[in-house]
Length: 395
Ligand SMILES: Nc1ncnc2c1ncn2[C@@H]1O[C@H](COP(=O)(O)OP(=O)(O)OP(=O)(O)O)[C@@H](O)[C@H]1O
Ligand SMILES: [Mg+2]
Image (cartoon, rainbow, N blue to C red; front, top):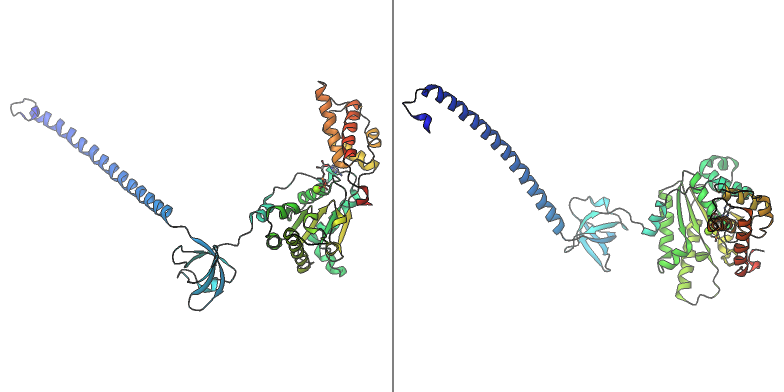
């Protein structure tokens, strides 16, 4: 503190300078203090948030239950997901009229009081079916089935787009179509193309998966499937490989068979139950029409049964055109290929084009020749003939 010395000549000046300095210091410290205070506030807020988060994490889980009955004075009968039923009370935040029998609710773990209502649930395999992306298949990519495509579109698309036509004429529009035909002829492909071209929700399920994964639950899944379709209408339900649940069973000896039968019964009931003028349509496909239950194919269920046959010569030519479109082919006569592949399905033709490409690659060429195709035809059709299904199936 030299500057306080009284005998200093520059005492006055020095004092002023030092005072200025001092004031400046105070200002800096004050603003620093303000900054620290606001920082403190922020951190305190953060601590509170974290504490709250911690409490949320520590909160006991809620049980899931189903409302069975609504009694008076905020008393509700619920069945907990673990089994037994209880009479419980309703949280004051929830108006009693919002709680309906059958509803899914969240329960307090110890008192089982109803804490909240939960949205409807669908089995993942049903709700996932709908999430499937729109497939990129267009009608142009299907060869040799123009007549069948017209029929499918008439049955599935037209009632969704122009229901009034049917009303004017005074007939019920068809509820759906069943596609039957040998393996690899384009049944699934047609369904994918319909999905691509329509704005309706397209719900695809595979019959065999239904049964394999959910023994004991097939009927419930069918019910949920139709429920979902109605909710998302306009919609199209596509059941691929329907023979897995729709096959005729002569003796129902095993419980698995009886289960499949119950699933089928539910499917028939749902098909009968919904309004044909409504905007839900059903498509199904199978390569085993011979084993289908008669109830499924009688009029009034699938009103149209469309046969998807093996392609004829023209059909094969079209399919060869489609699948070689992006291939680098040289001197390949497609007519010749169509002529020499009698009995091949669309899937066989697709396989032939891929095999031919592989032969070219193996040979170190970047183009595919007629020779490659000849070898591919031999390979694919020879394999096929050695494990041909019995022909009587499609007579
Ligand atoms: N008519 C067709 N036009 C073009 N490609 C076809 C045709 N039919 C079949 N294919 C080709 O074969 C593949 C398999 O066809 P798809 O899955 O539609 O057969 P499917 O009739 O459903 O057989 P499955 O009865 O075995 O289920 C298709 O992805 C496509 O590449
Ligand atoms: Mg298929």
